Image 1 (cartoon, rainbow, N blue to C red):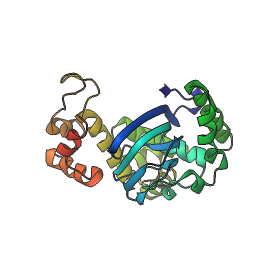
Image 2 (cartoon, rainbow, N blue to C red):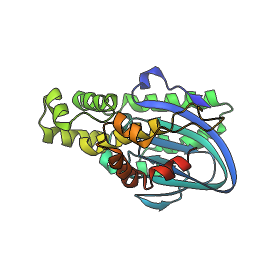
Image 3 (tube, one colour):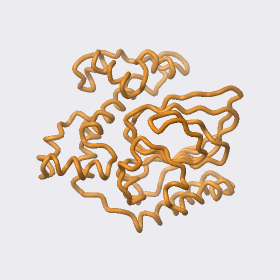
Image 4 (cartoon, rainbow, N blue to C red):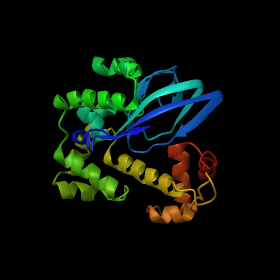
Length: 264
């Protein structure tokens, strides 16, 4: 069940996704860097995570912006709400330096935010998904009232980076906002979690993974036909196919072939 956040959260919160699933055998998924942050509000048992922060088994947790893959695994039931946020949304709502959360997946209790820590239990008690989404709206809007204000220059630079698929040069961003490259690096990293160059790398890779496996099932029922790696590399501004192949190894921790096999 998908929910649309309140319009006042536009640009900060991307979507709400209610989920319920179960597996009798261990179900593993590779979560590759995608330039967003994820808040998991679980009504069920913990999920195993293996990534840059090491092996963890939280129930409800926050995944800050990442530039490395995380493997999730669970057996049995999973039930809860996933909240997808932009990095600037997370900075605004939490009001803390984002490098503290980069490549980390802290449990809610570690965030020093009692209102967020209490949410899973309260959401689980709500009778319907619309009621849960309304509670989320109210909780995040309260945080917005006391939230941090990102620099307009950082917000503009991030949006420009996303619009260009991570291909805009860092020096050009600095010139366009009227800052020195060093000042942009410092402020951008503090509010996004990554410096501009690694952030652009993640944004470009996220676009490549979306293009590689289109969402529509053109290759048969439930099996989308992947685009060629060479075509995606050209579309996304990589030097060549080998360049994109190296990015899969570095950012996803697997080959492009392995990535595709996990998704089609």
